[in-house]
Length: 335
Image (cartoon, rainbow, N blue to C red; front, side, top):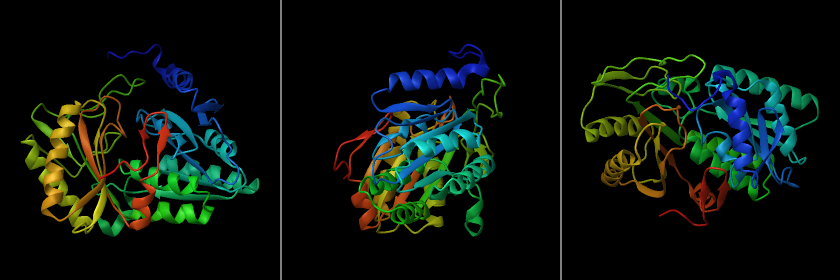
């Protein structure tokens, strides 16, 4: 195993130290594994708390800043943060207007964010939760509550963050975040595994001529394992899975093509080219777009496609500026 680390068991703390130091104009430490916006708490503003396992940067800490999240909690690599850093993050950004938790649908995250929510409510904080479940490959539409949360968080965080910046109420921010999540679908494809530092070995095995369609961001099994094929064929298959699950025809959408950590940018733009072609053929208008690494899995090679079906309010919210540690957008950037 070759990684730029010291002791594998010290990696997360050393990463947090470096992250805070490199972004001290935007964030501050509020606990051993929790950070918040420098200006937090902001009077009359709903606080947005995100979090999850390490190994996914820019998610989750990279999205703390104006226009997205107010605080984040870290876990070990691919492991949920305990309740304590979640509580610290929430306390740091609650001005009295309340806090909303937005996180992916994983057993550990659900358990620990629920524990934190219960504790905070007993202390007098107003807390609401939106659990993301945009991964169409992880369960059938009839069992959507079992689906994982993956790359669609880029759009849900921005929509909820913009609403909170307008000083909307906790109920209003929660409602628009729920609506964004309900209108978001994601599917990914994995080309290689990754190595969790504490384990020192690949999390799963793929042959040189194999890919995994529907792969999760922790190496969870996908919908199918198949022989590698030209990328246009792979993307056509993935796009079909998205559009069969949610009707995007003649809709305006936010579209992201996300790298999983080890995919060259050139390949991501090859993917975007094909997705744009397919959107055009389905009458889908791309109102907002992003290509890059937004939710990674250490050094895994592969990509995911996320689409959020927009209504007028969500599209307008995505026109607002964002200035976070690892994602920035000027006002009105879209189509």
